Picture 1 (cartoon, rainbow, N blue to C red):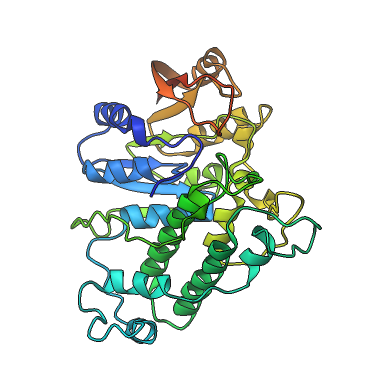
Picture 2: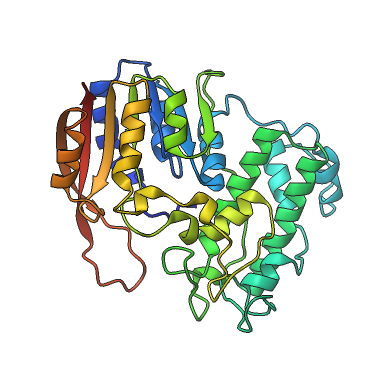
Length: 360
C-alpha cells in the first residue's frame, strides 16, 4: 500500500530528520503544521520527539492519528458480534488470531452495495449532475467501497468501535482505495479505460502501527495552520506547505469524502465535492506571504524549518528575502524525484529546499 500524494516526503525523511535533530533538543516538541500523510510526523515520533500534527484535510487527520496515537494493539472489544456475523462460516476464528485482522477480514467479505460511490464514480453508475458516468473505480470496487464505508460508519455510530479504531479503519480503507483507483496521479480526474491496478479487487490490509509507550505525548489537530499557530508553543515548527496552484482539497476530493463519511454533491465531469471550505492560501501567490507571516508572528516558537521546491509559486530568492524580515535564514538544497502523473513531460527530478528561520 502507498500514498499517492503530491509532495509526500517518504523518500527524503533522513534529510528532514537530520535538520530537525540539529535544531531541536532530544525529546523536544516538534510541530508538523501541515502534516499531509503524516510520514514526517511518524518519523519524528520514531526518533523520540514529542509531536503535534495538523492538517486541513480530514483524511490526513486520520493518517496522523494512526501514526501518532497508538500505543498498544487495538482490541476491537465491542466488534465481536460484527465479526461473528460476517465470519463466512469460519468456525472458531472469531478473534482467534488478531482482533484487528478479524475485523478487516469481516469487512473484506461484505457483499457490494450499489451506493454513492457506485452511482457517482463507476462506469455503471448514474451520476446526478452529469450524463456521463465517471470511471474512477471498477464497478465491483465501487460497490465494495460503498459496503465497507457504510459498515465502518455504522460500527462507529453503534459504539462497536472507538474513535481511534474508527480512524484506523478509515486509514486502511483510504490506503486500499489508493491501490486500485483508476487515476494517473491525483484524483483530479480518472482514466478513460481501467488500468491494470484498477482491475484488482479492493482489499483492506492491516496497517503497520508504531506501538510505543508514549501515551499522552502527541496531539493531532484538523484546521488551518494559520489559525492553529497562535495556540501552539514548541521547540521547532516544521512546515511543508503546498508549493503550487493545485489545491489539495480538489485533487484528493474522493479521499476526503471517504474520511468525512458523507455523500456530497458530486460536481462536474470529475465529480468534485464542494471544497472551498478547505481552500489553502499557500496555493495563491498573492496570499502565501500573509499566511507565512501569521504563522511566524503568532506561534510561540523560535525555530522554523520549511520545505519548499523549485516548482513553488515563489522562487527561493523571493522566499529568502521575505523570511529574512523575521530573523536569520539559512537553507540547503538537494535533488528529489518529482511526483508526476503518468505520461507527464516534466523532468523526473527537481531541486528541493530546506529553509531554516531562526526568529529574531
